[in-house]
Length: 454
View (cartoon, rainbow, N blue to C red):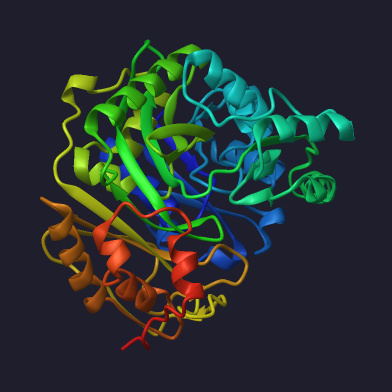
């Protein structure tokens, strides 16, 4: 039952955790790099401590610096947010060994689900539907790899066991491409993830990206909070998320959600997490589990009324979930647009000082951001500057509110993707719903271009 939380992250998620701590009466401790000394999370936290220079490797990714800060501030727990070290099993284990509470699943569960091969095997054992693919990691034998790919059927995708964030994967259309793809992906995996293990799966041509939000405690309770559709992507990076998923029968989602909740119990999961699936031709196929809170968690909060971050912290304090599965009754529809500091046409990063920042409001509108006029977007970190969420009684109402909110959102001093989102909310395929993960890439290839931002 800790009463202080150190936040090992930055940006809007750090601010989100600070606010959750305030509602719970817990002391919040914000650690930060030199570049983030003037941010909102640092200003609003009960305590703050600089742990290093702007470079993430010497600050937010330094386990030694973070644990030293925890000792100096006498923090009792660490919330990792998302990104950085949030899914690093070695970090979670180091926190545990230091006698602190890691606000997330146990380190051995992060390690199990962080390796895509062992995660898939665990899900198969738990009865969760998976993509057809190799039974384990590739041995390195070329003939064996060719035989596996033939048995699956081309096209296939070669994936890094330790991959994530859209990296460490290559689509292979024919056998003549296979060995080169394996060699390149193995080299990338070893360099980026420190794990050269690879596996092969069937490449689905037109899937949707659907995920199930879960929460589990240490008292034998696990619940699922509906589904999110995250299919509007560019280069495997999500731009828009919504809940519920359009055009999928509720009974199909319910069955999948129940399977995910049971899987949580079988692997000993604790805290907030997300099961990610590809959905094609009426079938779900597990691809990975995110063992942390996700960027898009607000859309689920909006439709369920459940504070996911609060529950995540309370579960880590040893409390049971404050609700049961029967209490989860989704209402309406929610959409989230990720606003990045990027040119809306070229997607070139746009760091710099924000000279004007006016956020929208009105019924059903929520803005999650650490930005304000005078704030600086650093070139050292992810370009996300805001999450704009719209909720309505129907998808049509949510989209109408999103269009209104995007029209009101004013940012100057940097480029943002607001104009892109304005255009997307009018694009026929998006307004209809049910599009696959390649929809935006097809639109861009066909000349889809947002108008200049007003």
